[in-house]
Image (cartoon, rainbow, N blue to C red; front, top):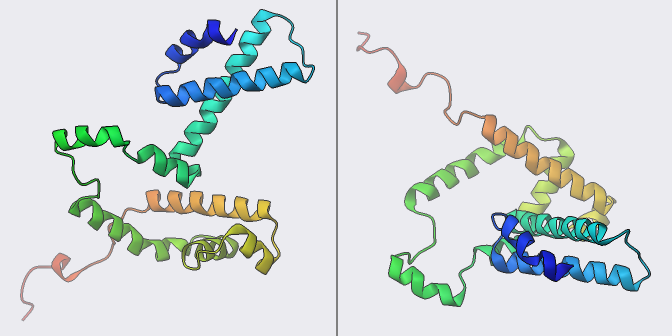
Length: 190
């Protein structure tokens, strides 16, 4: 069934991931079905096997996309890294330095300057978790041992803190309000 459905699954979902990642996801889904069958699992028929294969394949694809989009920092780095074979193409296209340009650096630094002010909009638990993650480079196990939290509470508070910080960052205008000397009335006021 996996061989019969392989080309159609890869073709239909080619926009979701790269070819190699799709192949890997299909292989994982197929192995899961084989393990299920060897463990005594049964299927109602070939149509059922096809549906289960596609369901497991899509589940692997979603997991991979989440990992690449940033939930797994290592996977995100690997996805953004250039393969050795791609280096020749970069030199031919004139792309030599993947570092951000001056304008991007200025915008990123400005955003970093706003973070302490935005962090005041977080709860005290959220502030504590983010401060320990960022400034102390403290991991989950160490944090939970010190503060008596469960790993699940730590994960959820950190996740909600990052989401709220993103929302606060998007909602803020970025332009400070209030009169400045250049915005006052013209004239010498003698």
